[in-house]
Every structure is written in structure tokens, then in C-alpha cells.
Picture 1 (spheres, rainbow, N blue to C red):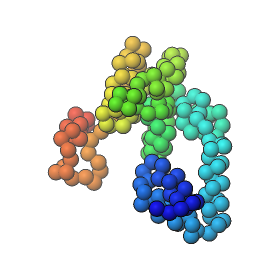
Picture 2 (picture 1 turned 180 degrees about the vertical axis):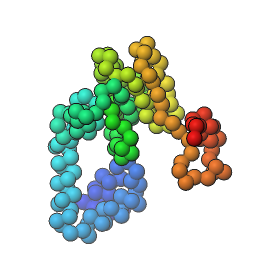
Picture 3 (picture 1 turned 90 degrees about the vertical axis):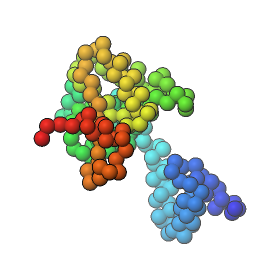
Picture 4 (picture 1 turned 60 degrees about the vertical axis):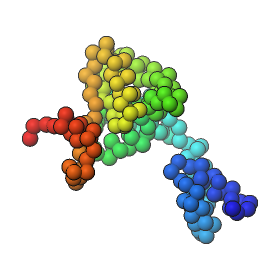
Length: 197
């Protein structure tokens, strides 16, 4: 549509997840009309994230050092591990303030249609971490979709011989939702996961 640098920027922005052609065009024209100082700051932030951020060598969360801040925190319990698919899931759980154990980031979920099997995830590393016997409970916090369920089931079967207490995050109705709008699977899980009041 456009020529030169502006089209190159639109093309690059369009390659980002969740950014369609119209959004890419809107962002490109915003950058074009933005103050040069703001654009420089954005460019520097992009460059710094590539230079400084890596994955924690223990749990595979994002970090700026060899270990992430959670793995460096001595107040965290080594007896409970929470397995998640991506680093963004760690952030979501941390915002609740409910979990004080350790994490393990798999780097995705089992998805045969996309060619992602157990060997493509950080499952070997998880098994190595569990081998010392310190962990007593493994919380499977994978996404409540087909891939997440398959991954959780696979992990549960894999660690069963270790004698760990394996739990799965409850799923059900969102706060503020209406029963009439809930799908059958969500409502069924809400019934399965009901608790005493």
C-alpha cells in the first residue's frame, strides 16, 4: 500500500501476535506522528529487552540475571511447584498474591496439530527439579483448553510414580457472570469443583 520505510514498519508490526493489518497501520502512523524522543525511548526499550532479558536457568521465567527474582527469593516454599505454560502465566498468578511456592514454565503446551510434543517442552527439566524429593505438591496451572488439558494429563501420569500430590487449578464460573451464559463444560466443571460454604 505504502512505500519505503512506512510500509516496512507496517509489515514488521503486522508480524506481532494479535496485531492485524489495520492495527499495524494505526501504530505505524502513531509512531510517525509521535515526538522523536518518545520513539527513541520505544526503540531503546525494544533493544534493551533483547540485550538484557533471558530465561531463568532454573524455572524458565523471564529474568535479567541467571535466576529470576522468584527463584532468588528465599521466602518461597520449595515444597510446592506451580507448572504454567508461559511466563505471562506467572505474572497472572503472582497478581493474586495467593501462591508462595516455586514455578516451572514449560514454554507451551502439547499440541500435535502444530507439531508440539512433550519433547518440545521443558518437561525433562521439570523432572530433574522434582527428582531431589523436596517438592510435595505439583499444581498444574495449564490453560483450560484442549492443549492445556492434554499437557496436564500427561504430566499427572508422568509424575504419579513419584508419589507427589498433583492438583489442577479449579475452573468454573467467573465472578460477576450469569449462569444462563455459561457453556455446558464450564458449568459442569463448576459443579465438579463445588466446595462447602
